[in-house]
Image (cartoon, rainbow, N blue to C red; front, top):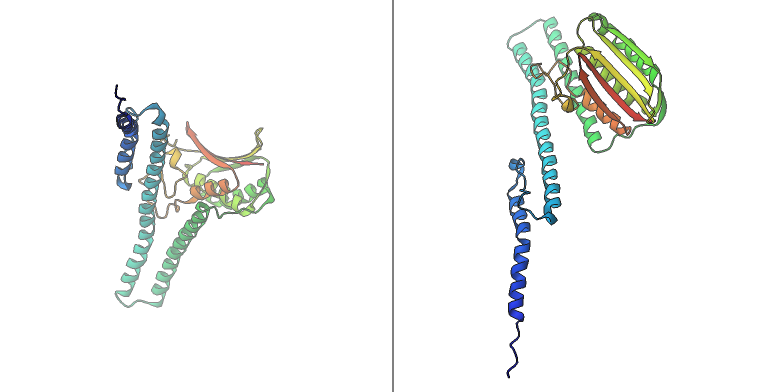
Length: 293
């Protein structure tokens, strides 16, 4: 009786077929992922037909795509807003200069134009300085000094500074509580000043602005700035700290503040290991800074 012929080739074929079938879902993932570009970041990988073993991989990739889509959207919005923010003052300077040069004028008229141009250049300079500050924050180059800061004294000084602006609208300013923190005094003063400036700008006539300082049981120092006024819609709250973002799109960007104050506040607070948040309901808006003690 002859020996049976070896069956290794058939076994190898079946093994290869099984391997190809097993890897088919992975090939599908690769194929779909290859189709996703910067212009198609809204696409997601299908999870329904994926084996359980790869489901976690697909969810992780979809989460990554969602983060990339949000980052690209913010970068696109930022580029557009920055171009608009710089175009307006540059256009103003160019137009005013061209009109001035269109005919001979008196010395006083030239001086008035130069003074007006100087104001525009100062605003441009502040915007550029703010952008450089935020660029440093994005690259983790903000290194706060560590000194004992009396927050009550800083807030009192800021309230005194903004008192004249508040008087124009008959606003009531107040501060309660006391707290101190180890941090960069100038940075923290700027962060609180931005919140106070924002409150003064958006509080209506005869409104009130109150600042509260306290130490929380969770080991944090809390600085809250609350103002009366129109309630901010919930969909705007998560984006208030984005650069150049304004809840009221009808407001003219230039001359209404640079639109960078809240973004700078967030960067300063994060550099101190803290966080800043906002709530708005029933005609009250409250910004809260929380920094570890």
